[in-house]
Amino acid sequence: MQVKENTPKAIVLIVIGMTAVAFQDVLIKFISSDTNIFLILFFRALLGVVFLIIFLKIKKEPIIVKTNYPVLTILRVLLFYIAFILYFFSLTKLTLATAVTLFFVSPFFITILSIIFLNEKIGLRRWFALFIGFIGVILVMDPKMHNFNLYATFPIICAFFYALTMIIQKKTSQKDSLYSQVFHIYIVSTLLSFLIGIYLGNANYNSAPNEQYQFLFRAWSLDNTFIFFSLFIIGVCGFIAFLCIFEAYRIGSPPSVAPFEYILIVWSLILSWIIWKETLNFKGYIGLFCIVFGGFYTLIRERKKHIQITTNKPFRR
Image (tube, rainbow, N blue to C red; front, side, top):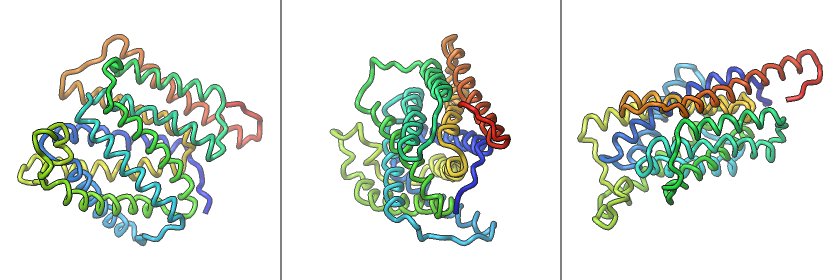
């Protein structure tokens, strides 16, 4: 079934999804020194399965596990899982500002991949809006790129894999429901995290030479009440983010939706100020203006495009 496009609604959903991601990232960074990455992934996915089943029961919709795109579904799920292992691990090795900033090359990847695989037509003005938005990210976060290290490649690889999953999801949404696609990710993530956790999360490899990799090898434990509560909140945030982001890319044009992921930057700044007392400098405020300008300019152009379609008048984006 052909998906009806509704980009304005998709933009609202992506803002909600990115807000959930911001709170999730802060919590993961907080508990990373006391827990295991695969325990986080396991709880996040397991709670997602539970929440999704409850959600579908309330909506009286069937739980459809079968997919019409088995190869693409397997590829999408694995890419997504690997992407966020890399991203969550990078949060322990980089500042939150650097990790988030490097991840935000994803709109460029999405735009390029949309042209290649979805035959999207991107005008010069939309390219300019994306460019302005990305420059804004750099100005706001002001990452110290001269300290670039191997771990800094992790968010970039994550961004590329994430962009691929969004493009694949646009294709699989033609026949697979949003909920079944989210269900696939949760089920596979739960199983993989459990199996990997059994092998790595027994502390056998958590020795002195591997100290920098404790987030991978630390033994699983739920004795700490704060960690247990944090894992629950991470699961809730992850579920909200999954539904909103996937639905946004299902019903919206990826190049139009992608710039609004920059709202994650705004939330990161707010939360960083509250928690770590970090604030913007003058250059940062200029960057924030660029982000807002790039995103809302894209929305304005998108609205004009819909008017053009309705009135059947030519319009150049």
